[in-house]
Amino acid sequence: MNKISKKIKGYVYILEVKDIDLPVCKIGMTSRNPYDRCSEINNSSTGDFIWEVVHYVAVDNCRKLESLVHKKLKPLRQKNREFFNINAEVAHNALLSIVKNQSKIKEIPVTEIKDSQEIATEEKRRRSKHMPSFRKIDADYAELLQAFTSLIGVKGRPFGQLNKPLFGMSDGNEGVQWNIAVFTDTDKIRLGVNLEGMKYSNWPISAFILSELENPSINQLKVQLKHPEKVYIQFMRDAWQVTSRPEIVEKYFGGKEFSILEMDDGIWTSVLTEALRCLNEEKGYQGRNKQMVTLANEPKKGERTREMEVSPHLWICTPIDLSEDVTPNLEIGIEQLKSVFEWVSRVSS
Image (cartoon, rainbow, N blue to C red; front, side):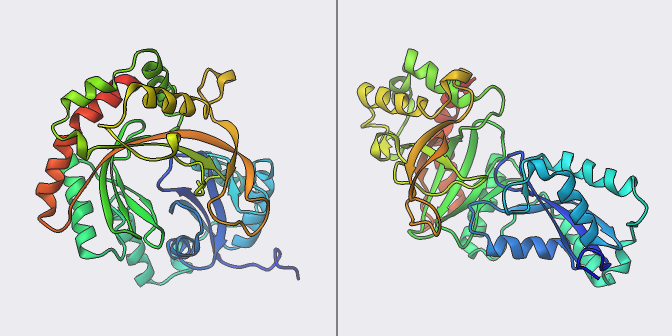
């Protein structure tokens, strides 16, 4: 009897990326709790994102069902991986269609696979699905993220991983975002206004760059800031390796982070021009371009310098001090960046 024909009760699950809104999902099988399996994947992941369970089906032959789903979605599968270039909802519909249109694989009650304690654990996870995923975060960091979500008035969307150089929380908005970032290797914390090179609604990053190139308004922003010396601009190049964004040598446009005070018209125009080249001119600058980039870390396979898809990424931020009360410091930071948020929102609309 081969592996596929051997019946195993379990789940076929669908995961989606928690910190980036991309049409990519992971489809796999497990004979255990899919939430526990997802945690294992996140803990062993080498990417810069976190997966979350969005759908699963309990069946009497999870290995066979996984095989059928993978076969049906083969044209969308990434090479040698369980990742598929498809929205999780569409993948779920395909999964349900397969179950419905055959008779050999049967859906079974969840109770046939796990005990009552596991069911209670899952219900707890479901109730807290949309709450911030702090996991084992230092108490100060937990207080920081909780204060951020409270002051911004959002539930918050985690990004990054605790065992990586960066983690934090954003408001989850599709477009201009508030976010808070913790750099674990330096213990620096920054509150920021963020605009990524994503499609969202008509590529707002493209509108921002083109508008500022035609009619620069950054000097008008400077005079609105109470402490411009405490506000920094990181205009960055994101390189895409499937769904992850590896660190690259050519990260910063202009070669570095700039303070608002040192950003004159010449530097700003140069940075914007470099950012525009990361968008596809043939698509009206509403899509990623391809460029040669250099991976910051030596890869296990392939050349360190390679052609990859790239997109621009704007982050304007201010430091947050944890040595004193967290909430008042965050309030000061939010007040400092309000005009920045309004400016980026207006120019990118």
